[in-house]
Image 1: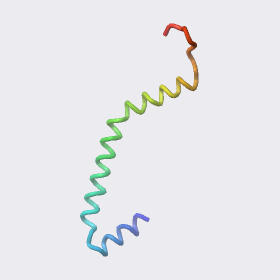
Image 2: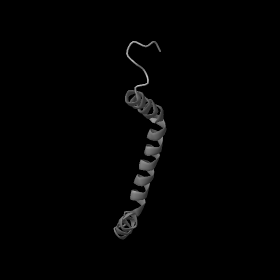
Image 3: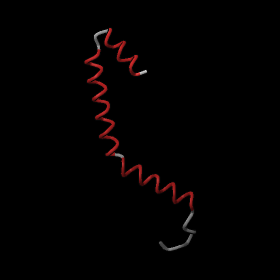
Image 4: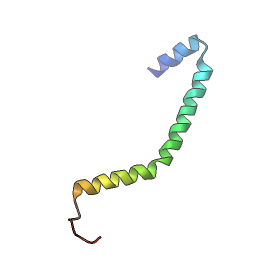
Length: 61
């Protein structure tokens, strides 16, 4: 599918702008993945603790 998209953009002479746009989107995705890594790990840990129920009400942690 991507090959067809780049082929169509090459025919329309839009290959360079689309390449720059895709590279920019890739860089932004890379930055967001590192930015939200800790947040997503904490959310997953919270879900894990909620599902596993290792602590009971009234226990001191």
